[in-house]
Length: 273
Length: 199
Ligand SMILES: C[S@@+](CC[C@H](N)C(=O)[O-])C[C@H]1O[C@@H](n2cnc3c(N)ncnc32)[C@H](O)[C@@H]1O
Image 1 (cartoon, each protein chain N blue to C red):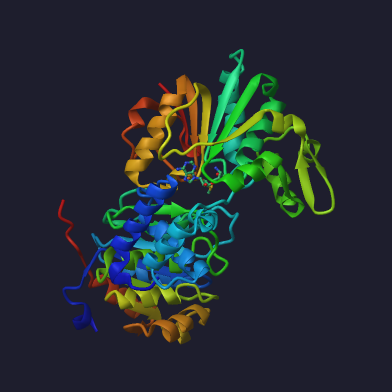
Image 2: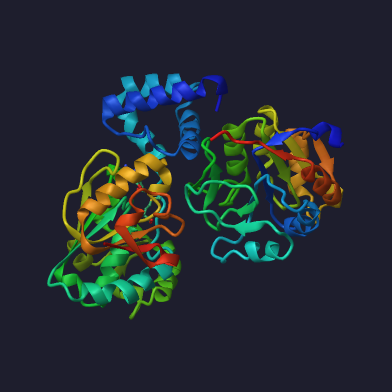
C-alpha cells in the first residue's frame, strides 16, 4: 500500500464513508487482514491512495459491489474440517434428537457450503424433515450462489473425501446431480435452508435456534466486534443450545465465555448454559 | 555483530521458511538462553491438509513453549508461536494474533509475506525478521517491509541453506541488514532484548 504515513486515518475515513453511504460496517474488523484487502482493492481499482479509492466508491455506487467482494473473504468448502461435523454428529445430534422441531443458524455462510454440509448431516440423522436452517451473510452475490446450490464439479473429489471423514453414511453423490462441469445439490436440501442478508456487525438476534454454526467469520473481527457478534449468537440460542466456531476460534478471549460450557474443546463446540 | 543489536528492543522475532528451515531452527533455537523472553513467531510452508508436526519437531529443542495460537490470542514472552496449517497468521497493533483464510500468497497459507508485513505494520522498528532456507520467494517482500519500518532483517546465508531460493530472494529484494549462518543467527537473536510493554 502506498503512502503509509496516511494509512491509519485514510483507512478509518474510508470505512466511515462506506458505513454512512452503504451501511456496511467494517469499522471494527481486525485491522491487519483488512489492510491487506484494502491494499488489494487499491490495485484492483487502480488507485494510488486510499482517499482516491474512497472518492471512487462514494461517487460511483456501481463499484461498491466489487469492493464488497474484495473486502469480504468468500472461502468455503463442503465438510471443511471433517472432524467438526463428525463431532456434531456424535456429540450434538443425540441432544437434538429429543426436540420435536429444530432451528439452525449458519452465520456468515458465504456461498452456502457449511449450511449444505449440515443439511446433509441432518438428513442422514433423520432430523432434516423437522429442521429449518437459516443461513445468513452480508455478501449478496454469495447468497445468490448459495441459493442456487450449484458448484464446480472439480471440487467434489475433495468434498467426497471430507464427507466420508465426517462420518457420512452413504456417498456424497447421493445428494447431487452432476453435469459436465457443475454439480446441482438436491432440491430437498435447498428447500430446508433459508438464505438471507444479516450482519453480525449491525443486526440483532432474529430467531430462537438450537444450533448456531459460525465458522471463520469471527477471525475477521476485532475483539470488541467479536463480543458483539457472540452476544447476538448467545441471544439467539435457546438454553442448552449449541454453538460451533472455526477450528482456531475460541470463546476464551470473549466476555461471553461464562455463558457457555465447553462441549468438545478441540472442535470449538460449546453449549449455552 | 552484536554491537548492532546491543540494546535492540524487540517486540517479536518473526521467522519464515520452507524446505530446510526446520534444520536451521534446530541449530538456532538451542542457542537462545534460558528465560529468553522475546516471542518468536514462525510461518512455515506446509502441505495444506497435513496436520502440523512443527510444534512437535521444535518441542524437544527448547525450553520455550511451542504453540499454534488461536485467533486473538495475546502474544506473550517465553513462547515460540507457529502459524496453524491453512491459516494466515497476522500480528495486530495491540499485541495479539489474528488468523485469516484469505487467498494463498505465493501458493501458501500461511504466507510469510503476510506475517512479516503485519509485524512491520504493528510494531515498526521493534521487529526482527528472519528468512531461512526454502524453495519459493515468499517472505522477500515482507522482509523489505520490515527493513523499511526500521526493523532488523536477517537472511540465512544462501550457501549455508539446504534450499537457497528463499533466502536468495530475500537477499536480492530486501537487502537485509545481516546475512549469516544458522549458528551466527542464533547468537544474534540471543542478544535481543524484549520491549517492556506498558500496561
Ligand atoms: C471465510 S468465509 C466463511 C464461510 C463459512 N462459514 C465456512 O467456514 O466455510 C467468511 C464469511 O463471513 C462473511 N461476513 C463478513 N462480515 C460479516 C458480517 N458482519 N456479518 C455476517 N457475515 C459476515 C463474509 O461475507 C464471508 O462470507
